[in-house]
Structure formats: C-alpha cells, structure tokens
Image 1 (cartoon, rainbow, N blue to C red):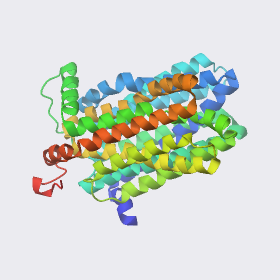
Image 2 (cartoon, rainbow, N blue to C red):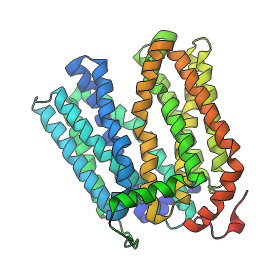
Image 3 (tube, helix red, strand yellow):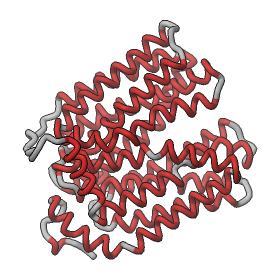
Image 4 (spheres, rainbow, N blue to C red):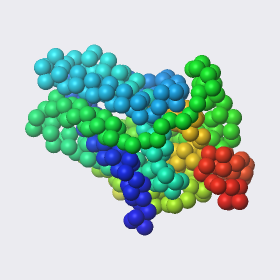
Length: 422
C-alpha cells in the first residue's frame, strides 16, 4: 500500500518536479497568510481582505480558458518557467515595497491581480506536465493524487511558518522566502529530462484552436458532465468557506481559534482523502466516487441547520474536506485519463477555470444571499444544489461509462475496449 501511494516518486522527473513544486506552494501559502495580515494591518478592513482575494482569483475565470491554447502551442515546461519567473518578479516587488515601507493597498491590489493572471496559466500547465512526464497510467493517476497531497500539506505548513515568522521578522521576509521558492522551482523545471514535444499544430489560428478545445471538451458527454458537476459544486457549495467565520461567530459563539480549528479539521479530511486516492491503482470507478462525494458534500452542508455544536461542526467539516478533495482530484484524474495530449492544456484550462475561476462569483453570490436569508439557509441551499448535481450525474452514469470507453482507448489510458468495465 505504501509503495502504491508514492509510486510516481520512483520517476526521476516527477521527484524533481514534486520537490520544486512543494517548496513553491509552501512559499505561496506563507505569502498568502503574510499578505492577509499586512492588508488588515494597513486598512483594518475585512472588505479589503475580500477584495484582494477577488482580484487574485477572478483572472482564472477570464484567462484560464485561453491559457490552454498557449500551453498546447508553446510547450508546458517553457510556459511554466515563464510563469515562475513572473511569480518571482511579483514576490520580489512585494518584498521590496514592504521592506522599504513603501507598500500601499493599491500596490497590493495590482500585484494580486498580476499573480492571478500568472496563476491562470500556471495551474493548468502544472496539471498537464505532471501527468505527461509519467511512464504509465498508474503513475499518472498517482501523480495527480500526490499533487493534491502536496497542496494540502503546504496548506498546513505554509501558514504555520508564516504565523511563526511574521511576529519575528515581519511580512517582508515571508515574501522574500516565497521569492526564493520560485527560484528553486525554476531550477527544478530546468533539470527535467523531457521528451521532445511531437504535437504538430495543424494551423496557427489561436481562436480556432480555442474553439477546437471547447468543442472537444463540452461536446463529449463524459467530459461535459464531469465539469458540469464540478461547476455546480464550485458555485454553490465551495463558497461555504467564505461564510464560515460568520457561522462560527453567530452559531457557535466562537472566535478565530474556533475557525482555525475547524479549518484544520477540514484539512485533515482532505489529506486523508488524498492518500486514499493516491493508493488506488484503477481510475475506472472514480465516476461513482464523484457521485458519493457530491452526496457527502450536500448532506454535510444541509446538516449545518442542526443546533450549533462545535463537535458536530467539526465532524461536518471533516466530511466536507473529504468530499471536496475527492470531487476535485477525482474529476482531475478522470479528465487526464480521457484527454489526448494535443488537447491536454486546453481541457485542463477549462478545469482550472471551474475550480478556481467561478469561486469568486460563487462567493459573491453566497455573501449576498446570506445577508438576505442567513448563513445557515445559504449553506443548506448549497447542499441541495450539490445533491441535485449528484442526482443528474448519477442519472447519466450508464451513458457516461459507455461513451467514456472509446475515449479511454483513444487517449491510451486503456489498451482496448475489452478492458472497459461498464
């Protein structure tokens, strides 16, 4: 079991990529916590915290669908080296402005928007390259899960390091360490030994290539339904994190420590779910887990209507961590197993748009709705929508499996149709 969990790490390229990516993500989370602290110190405004977060995420909705065309045209490693170089520049500017006491909220807004634009290209390129460097399908599936393990560990380690360093050395040096992590990430990308890109572009019309990627993604029922279910959950259920501080205060009578505890419990659930996905050797059957995950999310959110209790809330947060992780990583795995290499960047850009781009829109909708009907009923509505999405996906599960089979064969994930399990 343990060897299966780390199967992808036996691949030299992935070990190097895994190390560089891990340091970079830890640095990013450390910068995020330091930036939040700096914003609040400068403005004493919760609204500015939300606005900066919105500026950093909304580019994923606008740019990510087009980023896939650039990724497929220019090559994944070249694109990643470019995005990491720009991220290094962004973190360096943030460091310099902070350490010289020139930093203002306008600078932070502009630099957050810049980083959001960079990430709109960086995230789908990372998803694509980590799979293409694998030698077989089991390694590919394991690499996707290990990427999630890395992300969730960094989500715990990065803020913890930031919390220790901010009172000792200040926010500026946290930004400096993040800049250093990007430098290490660039070196790791340069050290990769990748096969030459043999994809032949039939034409140079970027708009036509975008339309081809859109048609490839959304005209095939399996890909379309995966993204549809993920989109429903991203808009209606994932914004629960935005409402959690209000729920903790109003329904649990808690404070920042209570919020941190619940988020940590959710992170533990996500981490265990990531290990479970990493231990799987089969990608077939994940479509059923997507339904199960959506049901877990729906029931957990609806259960917040029960009388406020810290330990019940902790159990629900743990289940939400499991549900969201399986939904996001399971969707990623199935898409990666279906997609042709020539379309991988474009398909993963739509995935990135849905996972990261619609979140800000959902958060704004959730916040507006919560002010009208209350936090609890907003959470319940998100749960109902998740259950509706699970019902729709399950209803088309037979058609999904039948139509997915030739796609698996065409992409090379299965050798023949005889290997398909309906």
